Amino acid sequence: MRAHAQSPWITATPGTLCHAMTVRACQAAGFTPRVRHQVDEFATVLALVAAGQGVAVVPQLGVTGPADPAVRLTRLLMERRTNLAFRSGAGAHPAVAAFGTALRVAVPPDLVGSRAEA
Image (cartoon, rainbow, N blue to C red; front, side):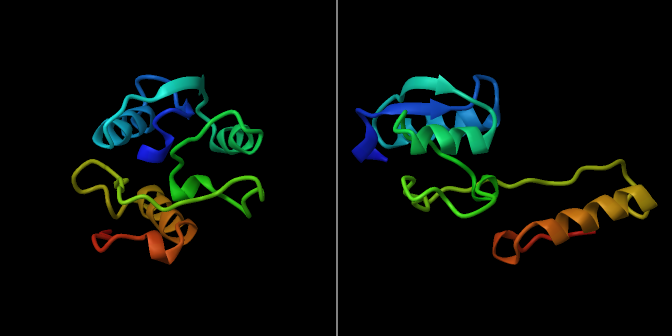
């Protein structure tokens, strides 16, 4: 990250978790990002990176296919967790159970944490 302290950055819009994660990661590396673009759609972020418009932090789930050859993907030592929240006792409801199953099927196994609960 520190190697890109002087680079223009592409972040999500302020108020989003993706924006906060990018700013915090940059600050932890000792700088504040110089934001050139604010975009909330990962394919567009990657297209801007490929066009040389800046660097960005994109979650692994945001990379849905082969990366453009102009984009270099580097895994960072940070992560975030996404949880499925539902009202107590509703875990067995067919809609909640179906949604949880769909999420588990959609997420690649190497990204599933150890706390997969029904």
